[in-house]
Image 1 (tube, helix red, strand yellow):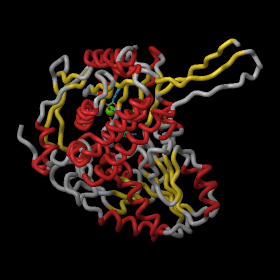
Image 2 (cartoon, rainbow, N blue to C red):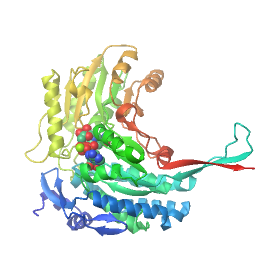
Image 3 (tube, rainbow, N blue to C red):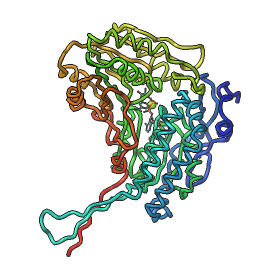
Image 4 (cartoon, rainbow, N blue to C red):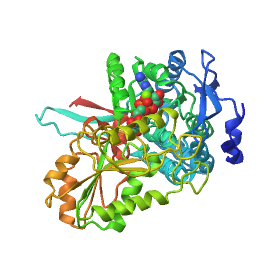
Length: 499
Ligand code: NAI
Ligand code: MG
């Protein structure tokens, strides 16, 4: 294989990892896929193949689920104390931190994202989350419950791990999405079969190496790389999987639900978004402009919570739009592995074509191009940060998740907020939203009215290991992060003792 030029930018550890033959991690062993086939791994900055991973499918999923089942039912994991489990999860966090630069480079190469963002965002968040969740291991409790009927029972609840978890994650924050699911599941005492996205499988395999190094018992954590329609579908439908956790498109989220029906496994879903940002006339432009700029362009807009719809009061619109145009023009576009890069390529040709299709549809529908819209450079999947103004509620660019660096703007002249909040809420999604104003009272009232799982006031991306994260409407089911994530990976059992 002729390595693309970007691979030469990797540090020594990441290079060594890329050079290794990739296998599946099942029951503590590294094994090839049963069918012997592989999937090409493509560098989005050049469009070149630089690695291959096993094309795992249903037979491999069966083996991985059997290993996870055995580890859950009979292995040392089943009887391990919460304190020891917590220590392992903490140790995994330490190992992720120790290898943070390497992981960030692998992510930047595989996904295309800026390595600085990967290091400061994805990887840092991941080790902090592992430690946060490690702390929960020893704090998962039931309750004693005084019976309402006065029946002569001593009654209490136990909170127990839900069992074998299938976890299917996307390519936009591949490592971090994996850790979002893996950390609480391990802390709760579950076992895992992880299926990373076919576009970005590398960091999940590196995570498996770190799980091995941390000393988790065999079978507790398994990784099967493969395609969504084969490996993913087999995992979601598997009768011996107790819970499936999915992050990805709303379309596939609905397929996961169908697949889960067979054994009524528990389901949590973190799906698409079309998050609004509302800027009132009294907003501070020096706060709003960078928050909106990062709100949409961070990770090239390939972020489920991306602030994609901007509603700006007409009195402040010229200032905000001029500021955003300038913000976009100053972003450094380049290969993800360059530490100065702020905008890397989109993840794939497919995503590049999809986003360009949306931009064209917006223009055909009558939107105005304020900036961007074009391809950057001659190779790879680079797209300029793009802003479309004068958009209307019916346009596909306003209604649908674009998942690219495209902001759609509309102005309003309502001095109250009811009308504009109604427009902001006019979406099938409800993942995030933000409001920019210096009026504290209005900020709280609007935060209460917006239908979304996370609200930012004078900021857009609000995320922390301790803060529940998830969606209203078709943005999903359940909340990850915080204690809410522990609830997703546990079941409650009621016990009554006749006295
Ligand atoms: P996708 O939803 O198809 O992929 C996400 C994960 O689901 C991957 O691991 C994939 O292998 C798996 N998958 C796909 N089909 C499956 C099936 N039938 N059963 C089980 N697993 C399956 O997302 P895709 O196609 O990569 O991107 C399409 C659009 O989805 C994007 O343009 C974006 O709008 C949205 N998306 C949203 C994400 C989010 O974080 N909310 C993440 C990725 C994509
Ligand atoms: Mg898909």
